[in-house]
Length: 105
Figure (cartoon, rainbow, N blue to C red):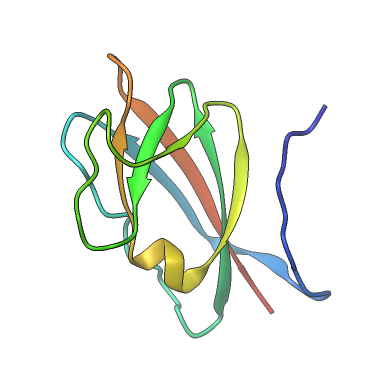
C-alpha cells in the first residue's frame, strides 16, 4: 500500500526528472540542497527512508528530540517555499536518507 500524502496538488504537475535529490541526514542539521530550476519547480515530493527525521522551518535548527517528526517509510509533498526554508536532522541513532524529486508544470 502506498503511504503517499498529497495535499491540494493541481492537475498538470509532473516530475521534472531533473532533480532527483538524495540527502543523508546525520547528526548535524542540514538544509536541503538547492533546486536546479526553481522557476519551474512548484512542489517537492520526498520520501523518508530507513530512519525517522525531525525538521524545523522557523529558522531554528532542529535537534534529535526537538522539531516536527517525519516517520521513516512515509512520502510527503511540500510547496517549494517550505522545502527551501527547512532544516532536517535524524531523530534516531542511525543516519536517515531523504529521496526527493521536483514537481513542476
